[in-house]
Image 1 (tube, rainbow, N blue to C red):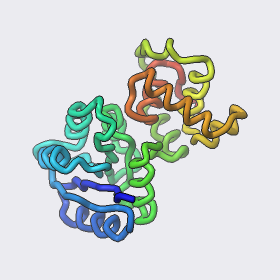
Image 2: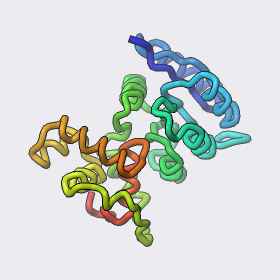
Image 3: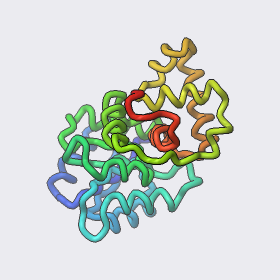
Image 4: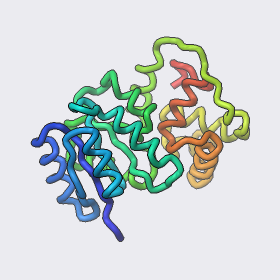
Length: 224
C-alpha cells in the first residue's frame, strides 16, 4: 500500500521537526515537505500534492486560514485535493471555526499525543471525520452560542427524510456507528447516507456538513 503523504506547515522550526519525527516513524506515513508560512505551503502543496496538510493558524506573510481557503478553492472538484488539519495551541482557538468554514477538515491541538496525531492523519486521509464526537460537540456549541439568522441551503430540500435525519445526528457529533445504533440501521447504510448528503449539498466532508446544519437552522445550539 502507498504511504499517506503529509505536508507540515508551521512557522516554528522545532514544531515542524517534532511533527516530522513523529509521523516519519510511522510505517504508513511519509512527510513529503515542510513550509514555514502559507505562501510556501501553497507552492509546495501544488507541487507535491500531499494527501494531508497539517496547517498552523498564526504565521507570517500568509496565515493558515487564508492558505486553507486558497488551497481548497484551487481544486474544488478534485477528489484528491489535500485535506487540511488545522494546528492550534488552544482547545477552542477563536480562528478554528473560520478555518473549518474555509475548507479545513478539522483541527488538532499542538500537544496532541503522538499516537493520536498519527491516527488523526490516517482518519482524515481516509476521508472520515477528524473531530471526535466530544470535540465536535464542544466546537460547534462554542461557535453557535450567539444566535444568527439562518442561512438557507437549497440543497437541503433535495435530502430525503432519512438523509435529513442522518444529518441531524451527524451535527450532534455522533460517529457513523453511533448514528447506526440511534437509527437502527447498519453502519454501511449510514455511510451511504452521509455520502449522498455531501453530494447533494456540494460539500467536501462531514465537518462542513455539520457547519451547514447549524448555519441553516436545521440544528440549533443546545440540540447536541
